[in-house]
Length: 484
Image 1 (cartoon, rainbow, N blue to C red):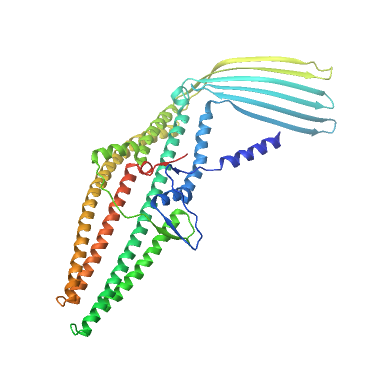
Image 2: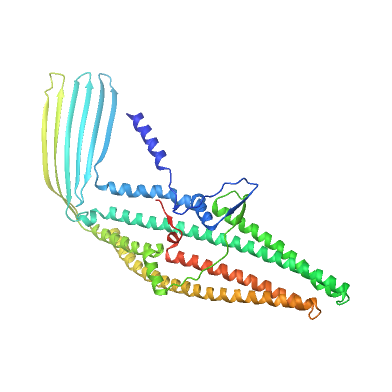
């Protein structure tokens, strides 16, 4: 029997230590490429891969194994609890020897009103060289019904209610962890896109600088430009080459950061393949706050915390009451002796009554009740602070989203106008109606405008992502199921 219990316990342990993972209902197939090839990932593929590989998410799901069992233990509160005790003792004396074998299973049940039932069975065999064999068996039944302390459904079910509230908090914590990791992956992916686009802008600027140098050489050969004027262009070429090197370094740093979040080998050649586009999102601040109050994990956690401190305050008050209980029980004991000198017997016992314990001068229980009441008042303040901070953050996020869109539109227009101005200035230079200084100035304006357009676009997309996180809608936006 011990071997069977041991093997079954080992199999049970192996089974429960297999954590689940979140899933996307629209997961794209992620290619597995050799290390020598470039792994091109869309943003959706990156999020799906991060859900499976990110170590923070995997750790959170490991913790959920023990958290779920906390609830299972609490829900077993009103189920029968079986315990088995046994012993075997061999005694050797100068004039006698004795062997005692005893086994005693016990079943106990707690009721939803605080009632405690207990039923135990004892089977014992005592063999002695002098007395002979003594076989005894007995059964004992007891019941205790508290009347004040630990009495009533609200008090008896408090541990179970607290466990269920804690489970809700754990689920909200898991939702928050997955949402934050997804947000980090999205932001990191866009940083890689930003670095890739900055490298493209830098290379295009270098190419234009090289073309300008060729135009300068042609003008010098035609006698339309002094030779020293080309120095400005050559200096600009050197600066553009430096800018390309810096952009390459930034791209590599962003690649490593994203690989770390995705849980991939840092030697993987990774490229973000999503196009950088944006669509305007309009959201009313009042509507956004209503959504946040229904989905935001941190706010919902504070609501649950309020219920928890209320229950704990109720328990603390109950523990200060007198312990008065109705008690009752019955037992039967039967002894059978193999030696004829000792007669066998059977006895019945039953009892009923009241037991009482009155605490006198116990300041500790008073302290616990005062602390519980303080926690209730403090949690009310925390909830008010959370509500105000949530309203402020949502209002800021919605207003920032609208402002970021307007800035992106203006930056796009500025970039287009700068490009047209540079083209006109280069045409004027080719016919001798402009100078290198003016062309290089327009070139710098174009680069700055392109970077501004890129940065405002990324900022607007990130503002959408941050708004989803503050609303508690990240999982819904990406169609992610926690699969817990």
